[in-house]
Length: 333
Picture: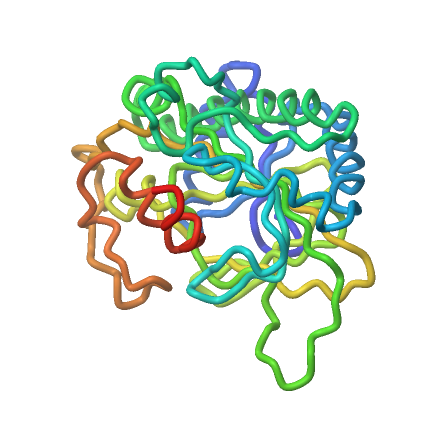
């Protein structure tokens, strides 16, 4: 356990595919049933790669805003990629106190999905920072591979074949990646702006987050809000709405938020969203004991019943991100 009471799980046996992965899967299952959040170590992602991405991200975010706006999201079109400035993203209808760079699987303009004008698919807008493009792509690839292994562990934790999710949803996962910068700022007097990001759940299957040493993440567990401070060398993982939907509520997507950064130095956060394929039809896993699929919309932050959703994952995703960037939705979709 960590100081935050979120479990710390060594996933090396999962990454290596050794027999001990059953024990690791059981630990993941316990965490998913308890509160849907856990730290992972032994993940095999090169620490030097992570540090390089931090260094280059600071270089980018330190640029003047007018320079960063050369890669603004409006230029990314339907791919929904690029930079947004502070206050440019909404959570629960309120501006977040952060800036960011939206990225995803790199697809060329002649890729069939891009030719078909599939939303959130296409080329990235890579800022003109030396080695940034190569480092981003290497990081996304490494963490995506970790996502495949973790989903095998989640499948095993449910008593399913390790390949369950890959065969149905994630052979070609939808990967969305974000570089977020939370500038340090004093909270203005008289304004209710204590959150860098407001309360929310993630949309898909699994989020794999690197946060720098500043911290600020808070998780709404059954026992109340707790901090999820940085753990050196560890990723924070949490499950999203679609895994909640698939497991009939056995594994809950947990609300979380980010505190306003008043630390005196800027904070970096890198969430990678490992999600079902855009065209995948999300269905409940049959025969799971204890999965009641109860309508918990009265308790959810967005008053939504995820168990009522039926259809393509892409439709669920677009409905959510359109609320985050309403202007971009109107311009692009």
